Length: 174
Image 1: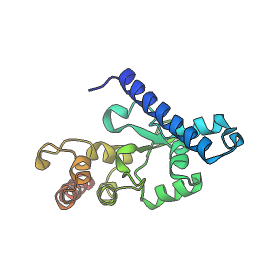
Image 2: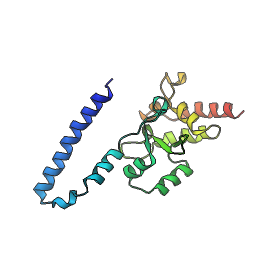
Image 3: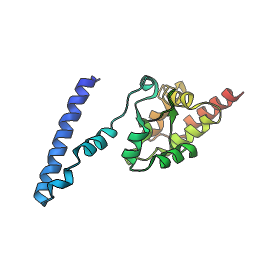
Image 4: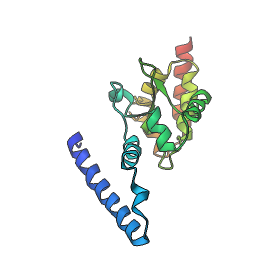
């Protein structure tokens, strides 16, 4: 497993190469330099895609915060709030009131994996968001000690973890 220092080096090398390629392409296309004038905003947008760190990272993280998610999705805070209220994004509230969104729920297409939402909704009938998020990231013996997240995001049927989620939610509600 890589250390944070190693991960940072890898990210910086890749980012440096991609930024260089972008500027090379821009020069070749005759793009005016003014397009890149707001370097602070560009850097902030790039950094927004990085997961934030919280004490809960060890259990269910890493996370995006609301600002990072709005920039990554290219939508407003109100749209994120509507997704939270509708239960179409997995969100947990920190003690300070800030919302965080586990990164593992998102597909490469920047959507929320639909099977994770089905599991989330089943669990949320009987438990708070943190309990549900921990359940989703905890190894389940019935799934060969895989987490429900790993199970469904690797293409397995949602039916087995959904039955487990419903059974646990029923037990929690009793």
